[in-house]
Length: 177
Image 1 (cartoon, rainbow, N blue to C red):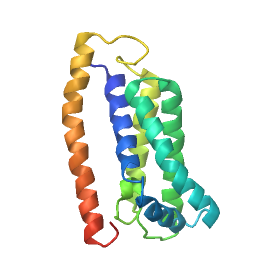
Image 2: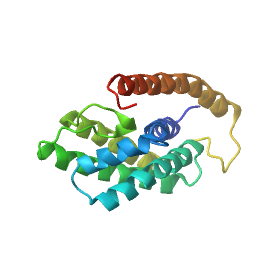
Image 3: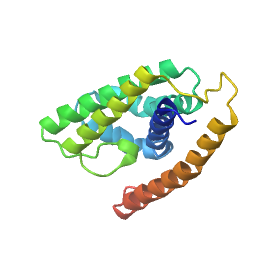
Image 4: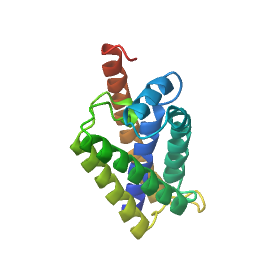
């Protein structure tokens, strides 16, 4: 039986992995410019954050997907989403129109991105309250949970790949890729 905790954990973990995936490698330069665009950090701290953010998001996503240290991963997700939402809110209120840096999206920041992040925070808080659900690595999965997770993965992975390909194509068409 697929629990709400498992569904939320897999959803949130996938969001973090997709967000991190396109920030590695040469895209780090674009991420650094994006972080500087928020006008909240010095250039030195922006470089540090641009270097640290992809691995932190990746670890958070992997922990959420695996169910290992899930309470820590959910707390980290809430903290990261809270900081991202605060930065977005301040930037929108200042009238900035730079890209948000969400999976290297080129779309300028808007209030709907703040709303999207608030929805993700609600998902994370709900996950905190209901628990991580079945299928953590710390206990062997039953066949129903494993089959449900595999079924979800066969849908989620191709969707994530299409979305990443779309964002890369959009970035290439604007000369940033």
